[in-house]
Length: 107
Figure 1: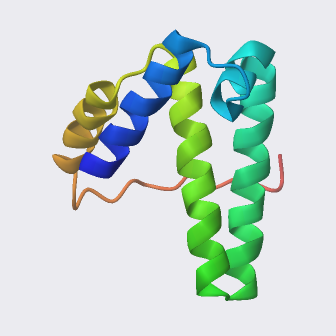
Figure 2 (figure 1 turned 180 degrees about the vertical axis):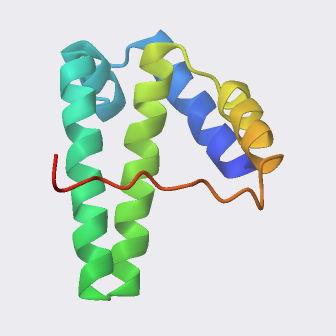
């Protein structure tokens, strides 16, 4: 989590510094719609890379998705600690298989 925490801090610092020529600052200046568009694009590219079975491409797309997700988190005021707290809650539920909702195709 240290690398992700460091990346998060770098993104936060860039937002505060508002450096000209920074891609991160560009995303913040464009707003949430642009940021979410990039998260969606990177998510799709990750899925395609995984489907194609090329590990190096998949790893690269995962990194792109993590970066854009961190930008979205900073933009929305979601901290690493917020995510860690939720992950801890979910870890407590390990082993509890959720019942899947079955759709009645006759209705």
